[in-house]
Image 1 (cartoon, rainbow, N blue to C red):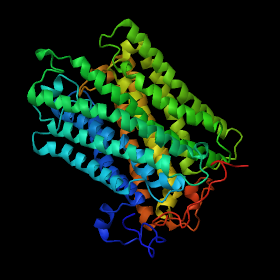
Image 2: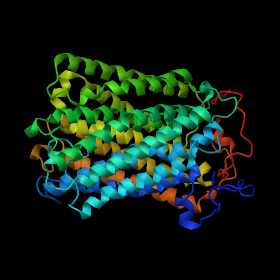
Image 3: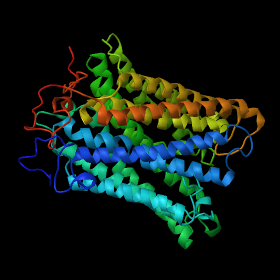
Image 4: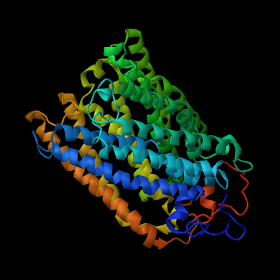
Length: 536
């Protein structure tokens, strides 16, 4: 590491003063832990913005007609909400924050393989965000939706060039992070840590990293082609010039469905860490969880067509994509079975991280089962482009990533900051968020079955009652998120200092390091002699 010295390597990374001090000491630090926290603080700011936009959209839907905004403003809000949530928070989220912070600690390394490249990834990520935000000053917010569907993306009078360029730049950050993690896991595991002695969170990061490296270039190329179409009129997607707008959908979803697993696989890894610790049992079916993670990453490349069942594909293609959609559900079901089996007859320790983990399983099962409704050809035709899709999407993407993120931050918080959060307020925040989440998104399943189309700023009077229920749920969920965030931010500075390295009794390596970790993590790199979840 460029900053380390003999006299400073045993200092807590939070207290270390290198060449730069204050804010500069953070944004120029190559320490993987500080890079992870930089991602965390950045995402916290933009999550607050995106959540506020989502709340404003729900308030618009409180009653039919023009409540807060017109259609153009609504289109711009759900586009920016989607871009921030997907490209800024959900896709990089768990790998960027907890992967950066804990991957080296969990495999017994002193840092990632390429520390400077790791810091550069954060800088590229921030530059991409700033380019997207610059659209407000050079043509207004984009209004295409976060999918940038052709042909509207190159016909809209609103300037979407900054959004396309910014999303492409953020893709480079994802690719570099993936390369870094792959090399780190291959080359820097502690002595004795064979592949099947590696904890499950690094395994999911490994599977995710391959998706980042192989799939992300596809979306970069697709967005650049859209940019060329808009600026140069090359005729790739524009039907007026002999192009095919359906080709855009194929290219977009070839990346974006594997991207769902970039979002969810690390979350599954987090849950696989928490369940055995709070059940006081070895994880049930360790190898099955590992192999199912790799299977999800592999099969996920072949199911993009289920987003396009109504676009005019051949019968054979429809049947093939439907079959593969059901097939990819099997590895996820294996994980749920293993988690539940681990908890069975365990000595359950009821703490906030465990509550979030169990909530993840509940929410993820709803999202997964409703995904089979969309994967079935007969039912997909009826609910395609309705609020049913919105509900399913948020149960899987926001529910899966959000709940696992909350589980992770509450689980690893004392290790990261050396302090403990207020557990009473943490539990109140969890209950409030969980109740609000279900109240917000469950009515959308009903609205979708009734025929309410998505992405509309207005609706018919018969949908009014469910929209009231959903909007009230959004207020409750935002309140829960605010309680959680305020509690964690306050506790990171003023919470009770933890005197234990391992307050939860975890068996993986990060709990054997100092709290908070020192600059180089270990005075001596540990030697691994047993599997990571050896509870008697």
